Amino acid sequence: MKICPPFRALALAAALLSPFAVQAQSPAPSDLVQAGIRPGWKTASGTYIAALHLKLSPDWITYWRHPGESGIAPRLDWGASSNLAHVRVHWPEPRLFLKAGFNSIGYAGELVLPVELTPQDAAAPISFDATLSIGVCNDICVPVDLRMQTSLNGGGQHDSVIASALTHRPGTARAAGLRGLTCALDPDSRGLRLSVQMDIPSTGNQEFLLVELPGQGARSHVLPSHREGGTITGQTRLRTKSGQVGAIDRSAIKVSLVSENGTLSHQGCSLAP
Image (cartoon, rainbow, N blue to C red; front, side, top):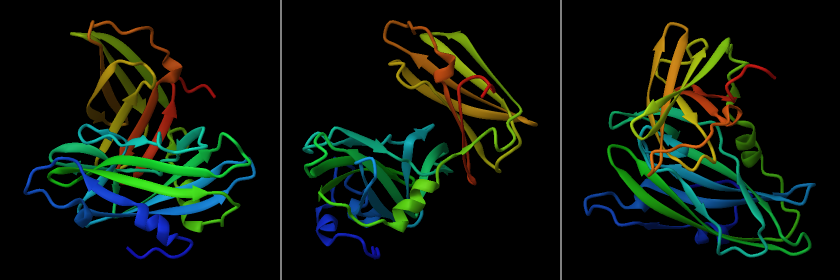
């Protein structure tokens, strides 16, 4: 993969690909994705902006922070880093894909994934040593570990590629013409079914309404969406081992309307500002 400077050759050598156990006939991960680190810059607030730069083989995708109906959710483990207090991943706007009969949310072709790193000691460098576990999928999914290692200790250089990724975020459903929104909680066999209905113009030939409840702790399973005229409905089952789900904070519910044209988001079950 050719990536124009600033792209550290040492960081590229450290962005190693290693497969989990996969079927013998599965393609090698190195044939499906190439990866490197863009070191980025130091912000005025003292954090560092860097990015993982992926290039995927044709017809293969990797997933957004939520894979949709089926797929492998990405996981970032930065426990081997030093002088690192917090990592925030800035996910660019994803698209909807139909893979193996399921609606999948993710990226094709190329992905620049910005990460914002907060040091514990602002006067000392960050040693960033992290592993991003992703799925790279077509008709099958190949789990891949991307190991990222780099040292960040200076002001760095503004990177227009990272800056562009930071601006390409999901839009707001309100700006796209959201006219109404209702949420419903109904008993399910082992918990609750959370349904969200949005009154919004169509955003594409294929649409998927993802309903999330971050921090709930219950296992969740998203269900297919359904559009009828100007209204689209999405549902998620919330389950626990005991069959009990705690109180639901409706303002915490996240709704993402994803199509082949992009993603719109809305926070909560109200249109109030």
